[in-house]
Image 1: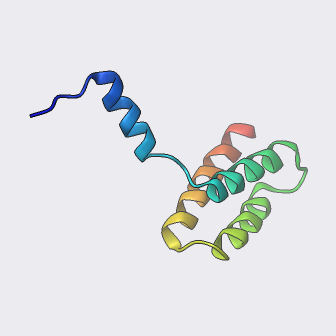
Image 2: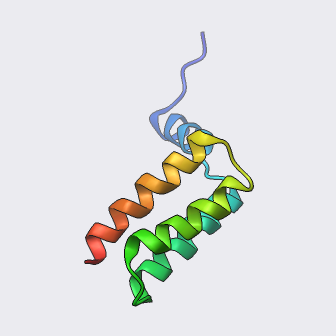
Length: 76
C-alpha cells in the first residue's frame, strides 16, 4: 500500500478541483462587471447566465448563479 505525503495529497486534490477556463472566464468577467457596473446586479448576473446557458448544463449555470450572487452581496 502506497501512502502519499500530505503535500502530494493536497496537490492532487487541488488538481482535481481545477476550474475549466471558460467557466473561470465567465466568473471573472461577471465579478468585474458587478464591481464596476452601475447596472443592477440581477441584470448583470442574468446576462452572464445567458452566456453560460450557451455552453453548459444546469449544474454549471447554477454554480455561476450562486457565485455571482454571493459576490454581488459582497460588493453592495
